[in-house]
Picture 1 (cartoon, rainbow, N blue to C red):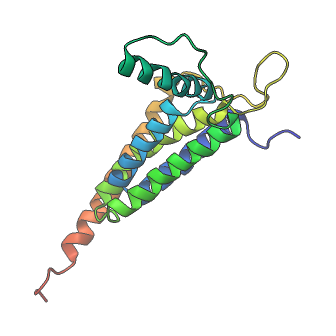
Picture 2: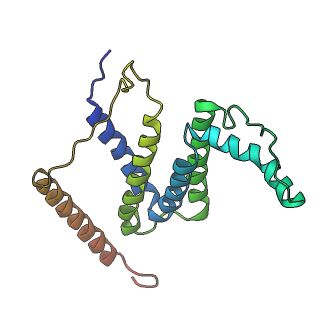
Picture 3: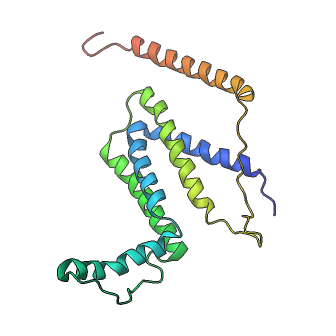
Length: 192
């Protein structure tokens, strides 16, 4: 059954969802979440299970070399799938990302200023890009090794984006002016 949207449209809908989440959470919360997303992206890869297992299997020989001064040629034990394979890697990745969102919500208050909300879109979109890139490794592949669902984003043509950027800039300025006017209209504390 074909998707009602193309791959590129699905990608942009997902990025738009991350942008909305970033707008709601603010830049402080999203910056902390971005750190956890990047940490999870770098450390937890489907192929990293074997590397971590090999590292942990060599620790006893390294400790033996440090304490006795003689190298051990004994075979190191390597856990077959330290992270539990692809499914375990995905669960650990989701746990780290979820921890980042949780700690971001606990560490910082809700954004008070509209500027905090608008700036929150940037780290949220970056986080979304890394999350989508990580999840694309789990898409089923055909016999040629190509995923059945490919998200191919062509290089943007700047001449086509000028009207969109212009409209976004105008909308942002109008929203900022409305917010500034609403703040001026509100009486301060102790004033009537």
